[in-house]
Image: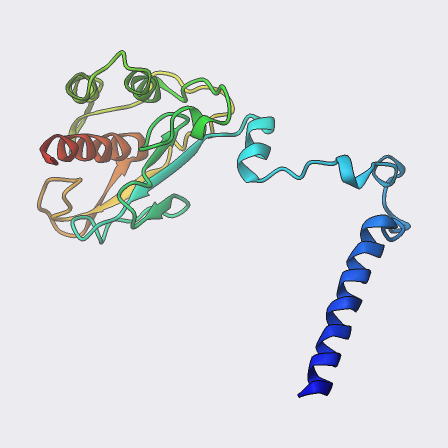
Length: 206
């Protein structure tokens, strides 16, 4: 037991001295490292996490659809999905807690619907007013779905997948219709319907 304690103490002392030595005299930079990077003082360099890096790049736009048992068979290749009902994301403002790209930038709304989300986040639109506005922006006629939302313009760099389709299964809550198989629905319209469902559910929760 005594020998074990001595060995443990030696290992701890060695580790401590190694850390101190590394902090005082960092290893030389790799030969292939650019001179400007090699000359930086590591103690003064700030490592950016994904959110901070996104803010610097101006890329704080996300598009995430929510999947539940009520739309479990809907799918869209290339579109991100989440099982978390609070993970809905649309542009820089749409989604719970996603105000202005997660409070990390000053991104302009991706489109008209994202601008409505911004108004709601900033307090100029109430929950009821946002629901009404989301209902009114569906103005483009579609032979199968009726009136749908098609963005009149898209902010450059917002990466809005406006041309993508979500394949909606028969009986899906989001589709709201019964038919055989799957039918394509433009992504902005599907996202609009999910936002409406979410806001309407929010109204019935205590």
